[in-house]
Image 1 (tube, rainbow, N blue to C red):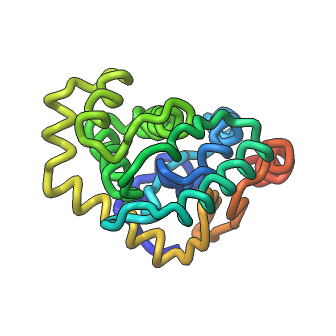
Image 2 (cartoon, rainbow, N blue to C red):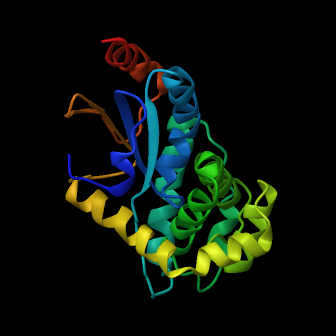
Length: 217
């Protein structure tokens, strides 16, 4: 596996690397499974979150064609996972699907309190997909961070910090170097060897047995 600064700080002999994006609908579909995976891994493996950067730095607004394609995609995720979606999102005009701000928001929280990185990702997922909140908006991101206990001033300083921006880009680069072909992706690392546990959505029941076997080996 390529080295990422955070991947070198493993306290346990096994590590799960989770690659996701706050604006990846399949990652939202995978959210319940990931919560159970973290529970199963507790005490057996460290779980690290990396922000993949699905569509970072997008500048053009969604077209009617891209809205239609995305709506169909969300429908597939809803059908497969049962996760809620607010399709009123597609009534928005001029929305720019830039995933860099919410990715950086998770990194900003991770820098302030690593234990809140996963809760922030979950909170962003729910806000965007189920509640139709604009998680590309800095004010909204600040409010969402506050809802998980991060003071607004602390979040804003961390979000705007050059080091946070660089760390976000480092996550994107690590994802690219690791040849991640889609999100969500979960990789297990033990004794310097990597095992791909899933690349793409799967229900937890499909992953429970192989993951348990890997954790207990």
